[in-house]
Image 1 (spheres, rainbow, N blue to C red):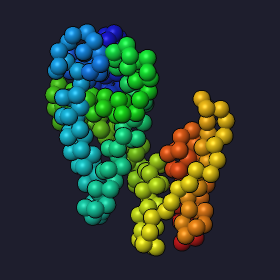
Image 2: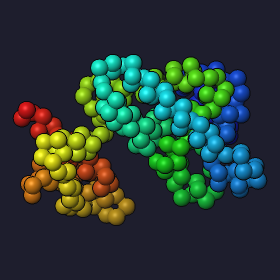
Image 3: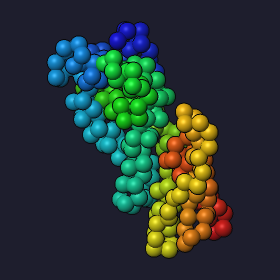
Image 4: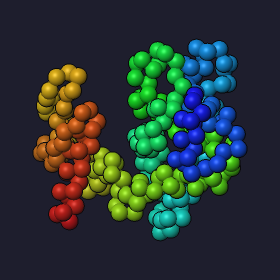
Length: 233
């Protein structure tokens, strides 16, 4: 990886690395390591394993301190929303990790730099690198900064992207059932398709939304339904 690209990444994180090799490894996918004969431990999977544990601890601590009145169950649900692939992909994109990744030719050609699972793994590996290089206190600082908008969303009532979970919990508590999602329309050409979804409860559509994927459309339908229900209460 170009040293300037790596330096730009750590500058974004506002850290001063002692050993840049950890960060280069965090951005090295197994396809690149295998293609270049770097060895089985030269890619980021071990760092991802470590980063996953460090992330869970740092996020758990941040939630524990920020929400002193919340019970364990609610903290657990919030943590799950914060450390899920969708959240980590969002944060990885904000850091432009896709451009930093070292990928094999096939992985790069097949869209690896935009693949959510790969980006989320790289974000966790990056935290593992910070932990090994600078320690847990620096991980805490990075997590607090990177997750600040998501934590603020929780403080204001919910994660911006987690309306499906909110609707599921609401419907189970209020009606003893979970909502259904139906794709009611597909618009546009195959390479730029828009999906339209409805959230259905007791045979009635409570919300409708659209998006470039079925998942995105369902989230928008859940958001519309949830906000409508909250206005009635």
